[in-house]
Every structure is written in structure tokens, then in C-alpha cells.
Image 1 (tube, rainbow, N blue to C red):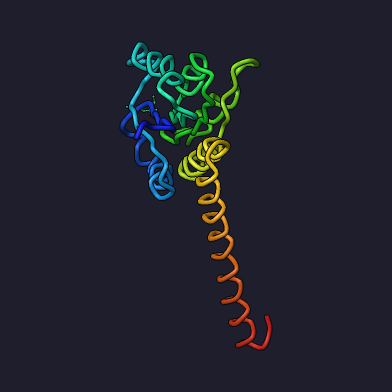
Image 2 (image 1 turned 30 degrees about the horizontal axis):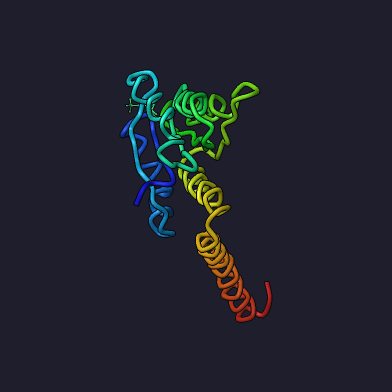
Length: 171
Ligand code: RP5
């Protein structure tokens, strides 16, 4: 099946950070592809990918990078497919450098910026799927079920905690 979501990163070393995104895309059954594209080491390949994203049918691109982190912005500059940026913590600045780089896109070329690291990667995948779900009712229902299950986990923890409180005769 043709990919609907592209997951791109500046280096193979970013892959571990992106794993939660890939796991969610697989769990929710959304066709996706993974590419290693560096805008400072392989600029032509990165821009070619962005230039053909729309015609290839991609509906959203998750773009992750660390350090100066210009990949999401450069991809966004070459396509109208929504780009969701994930800052990766790889330098002594622990991802704050990448966060500021990605979030501070100048007016006119937006990059939706998520949190640093694995939580941001997971949320980027969820947001990308929510974009796809605008035209896919079945996917929207899978996302609804997934989110309800997360709520159920918290409720189960709270019920367990209430039992402990009761056993102690109150906190
Ligand atoms: C960025 O530089 C990449 O996104 C990666 O986070 C960082 C380090 O890359 P490697 O030196 O591990 O290839 O472009």
C-alpha cells in the first residue's frame, strides 16, 4: 500500500528516538515509510523527497533532527504537505537547540513542532494520523479507541490506588 505518512530523520542515529512513532503507526495500521535524509549532507536527496511528497500521496511528514535541526524546515519549504517536527536530543544542549531551531520557523513556512525526544515522536505520529483521519473514518475510530484505552489505563491505576487507600484506612 502506498505510504500516507513519511517519517524522515537527519541521521540513522535518530532512529531510536523515532521508534515510538513507528510503533504507533504500525499499531494503528497506517501505511508509512522511513527515510534517512540529511539537508546538510544529502541536500539534493532531501529536497527531492520533499518536492515529490505531494504527488506520491503523502498526507503528512514527520521530520526529526538534532542539533541545528534544519531538516523539518527545509522539507516544509519544498512542500505543502504538513510537516511535524521532532527535536532530537543529541548534543550537550539536550535537544533544546533542536527545539528552538524547529519551532522558530519564520512566518510563512510552518512546521508543527512537538516535544523533544520520544514523547514528541509519539505525538507527531498521532497528529500525523489525525491529519490522515480527516479523510478516513475508520482510522479516526481506531484513534478514538486508542485514546480511550489510554484513559482506561489511568482509571485502572486510580482504582488500584483507591483500594490501597482503603486498606490503609485513608491517607
Ligand atoms: C543531525 O545531526 C541528525 O538529525 C542527528 O540528530 C545529528 C547527529 O547526526 P550523526 O552525527 O549521528 O549522523 O543532522
